[in-house]
Structures are given as C-alpha cells and as structure tokens.
Image: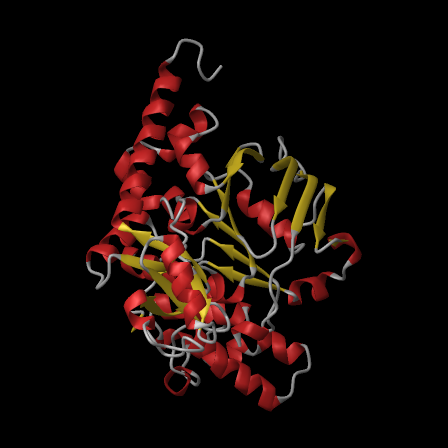
Amino acid sequence: MADQSTTGVPIELRKVTKAFPGGGEPAVRELDLNIPAGEIVVLVGPSGCGKTTTMRMINRLIEPTSGDIVIDGRSSHDIDPDRLRRNIGYVIQQAGLFPHMTVAANIAQVPRMLGWDRARIAERVDELLTLVGLDPQVYRDTFPRRLSGGQQQRVGVARALAADPPVLLMDEPFGALDPISRERLQDELLGLQDDLAKTIVFVTHDIDEALKIGDHIAIMKAPGHIVQYATPAEILTNPADDYVEQFLGAGSSMRLLRLTKVGDIEVDQVPYTSEDADAAEVLAEIERDGRGYALITDGMRRPLRWVGAEHLQGIEGPVGSAGDPITGTLGHRMTLQDALEALLNADTDVVPVVGRRRAYAGALSLSTVQNAIQAIKTRERERRLHRNEPGAGG
C-alpha cells in the first residue's frame, strides 16, 4: 500500500491575512509560508497567535481576507471547497468521531461520498485499521465509546487517510491524551510518515512535540506572524530572538540530545551494494574503504546483511546470501538519545540508518554519536557566548 499511495504536494501561503469583523488586530497578518511536499511542518505558539486559523485557511474552513494559498501549483480559490476538503485529511483533538457510527462507518465517510463501491471501501477500511495498529476483526464494528482516547485518535487518523489525500491537517491531535499515549502516537505518526510521505501541517502549543515530529517548525507570535521558520536543529542551536529562546525554555546539551534527530547529524557512509553484485568487486570496494565491511541491500535499498572480507573468500559471481543478517536499524527521525540507547544494546558496533521507505541512508556508531554530542555542546557554548556579548541580539 505504501508504495502505491499518493504522496504529498507543496503548499505556499502568500501574504495571507485574516481579519475577523470587530476583532481588532488581524488574527493572521500577511503571512508567507512555503511547505515542502512530503514534510511535516508544525505551527507552534501560544494561544491566540493564529496557528489554528492559519491551518484552517488551507482547507477553506476559514476564508482568507486577503492573500493566496497555492496547493500543488493551484490557487485554493480556484478549487470547489467541498472538492478541496475531500483531498485534504483533517484530524482534530479527541478525534471527532461520529458516536452513532461504527469505526468502519466513520472511516468510510469520504470514500462513500466519492462513490466508491462497497468492496473497495471495506478493503480500504481494513487496510487503514491495520496501518494504524488496530485489528480490523476486533475494531471494525466497534462504536467509538468503547475505545480508549488513543484508539479513537488512531481511528481519526485512519479516517483522514481514507481517500488517500496528499495533504493532512492535524489540529492538536494528541493534546487531550496522557503522556504515554501521546508519545506512542507521535512515534506511530512518524513511522506512518516514513511510509506515506504526506504533506502534514500540524498545530500544537507544545514545543517539545513540535521539535520531535517537525521537519520544519514555524514559531508564531500574535498578531499572526512567524518569528522563526527552520528545522528543529537550527531552532535549538540558533534561536532567532529572545521570544524564541523563551518559548524553547531553559536549554541544555541533554535537551538538545533528546530532541536532535539522527537525520540532523552527519552519519557514516558505509559502502552498500545489492545481492547480485559481483563478490570480487565488493571485496575490492571493502578493501578500498578500509572499514572491513559493506552493507547488502534489497532492490529498494533496504538493509539486509553485513558482509565482510571473510564472507567473500572463495565466492565467484554474485554475493548472494553471504554475510550476517541485520538485527536492527535506526530511523532517521529517531532522537540521538534513543539512538544512543539502541547502540548500547546492539549486537554490532555499527547500525544502519534508514530513511523513507526504510531505505538505507547511512550508518551510526557510538563514535558518530559522541562526535555529534560534542558538536552540539560546542554550538550551545558558542550560542551562549554570542548571546552574552554586548549588543548581541540587537
């Protein structure tokens, strides 16, 4: 399913303003924002900063007063609102499920409006329940009141994905959950995104949640403008001003370690090749590289086995099944803190890092993480020195 799904599209907000009648200052004022295709962009800020208004203008639940919102190269003004919303998934806090409908009926709402036949809808419902970690046989005919808060949110995500939209809007989707359920669903969302590559606009007031899940983060301030738009690593190490620094709270190297992602650091580039590669050529590459090993991947570049010089002695022709099976991988969205723990428990000194579609993206070792920690500490120290210089920060 993941390989055939619709991937995300770019979204651009151009000088978007929203002023409510009698509301004084605009809720959003001349906001510019480029949201790359297939990324999670988080809008974060205190109550009243315009983040939810901004998100709801994307699917025209709220109409902009001025400016333009361009979705996949087309102005949203030129798209019928109902058609627009059917191509944008929407997840809200506490799921918003219809209590009188079963789980299956809730998920089937948009496909039914699009005229899908019953067999196709039933197949899609079961596919999505499996995708979000709910057994279709157990939950298909269950009513929302019998579900926990976390289960209801999973169904809400499944419903938003039902018609395979390229864009997903998520408005404080995990805000009402307990911390354990919230963290688990954040992890599951990141796992889903690695497979689906949707364009996700996510609203939260929690900076830790934003730093954990966002590819880019827009930190907003009233009246409705962006103070800093950057990657989590850049925001942590180079906050734009005092407002951002105060919003982040007390910084420390350990906090950076906990919130910096594996994909934000420079990973090792271990040689990799396929099973049908010539063993003699692989052996020569291993000797040139100097590490003493290489990675064997499948046709989609997913890690399969480590192979060393000792595995290739006497083999003529393809590498085939030579080598030792991979016992674990690290996701590129995993935090350095989690990666460090995984490395300490790993069977090997080096572990493959995988990106989207579980494709090989590099490798990580304890020394790589140690170097990254040192770099983080250096950046943090330099940032503090800069902030304390006379005249620094304007």
